Image (tube, rainbow, N blue to C red; front, side, top):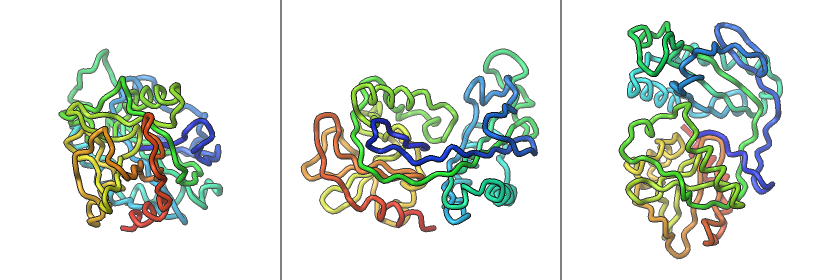
Length: 290
């Protein structure tokens, strides 16, 4: 799950408009088009990506991100993405070329299935080869955000509990965009998405975690939520436990949305107000440790 640029002034990210990109062996500015118009990632959202925080010139939880990237490629029948060594060399070069990113930055790795040489969605034998796939990355200055937010439960969009696509971080973000738009129109910062099985699954770009009776809970993967990196860090450390999260909160619940770039305490869901969890940055920071 990626950005958290909430509108309304309550939780606007401090993102500097400075970006450098790499594609086809060349460094380009963000407004220099280099992607062919028949790329399946562009025309069909047929691709996967990872969003990685860079702090003190080092990628945070890189191994976990690359593991998920590779697992998603396998699950979707794509060729294996670029290696860790290749990624690290490009990260170092990108930071050197973008001085504003040397404080903190966000790296996005993109892996498309490549050119669509015919009409429609059919995959050819060529699309299974790594040589047909296309890789590019972007790096831009970024400051993690920890401001409290308001949310509503989307009335229009739901996560499909049975879809394997939800297990992958794909280019297809239309559902999240529409749910966020729905929330913004209604005066909220973000939307929470129900699962088709009736429980809460996640936010539009973040995993949900709930502090309930001194325990930290997060929805099961079976809800259709993305297996987020920070979510998994919490599970691995024993801080988080999977549970079914009802749309109706319990008394004294504290709800948060978390991803690799931010952690936001939810202070309102629909008409229900929540006590702010004031240590969201401390919690998030503890989970960034490998």
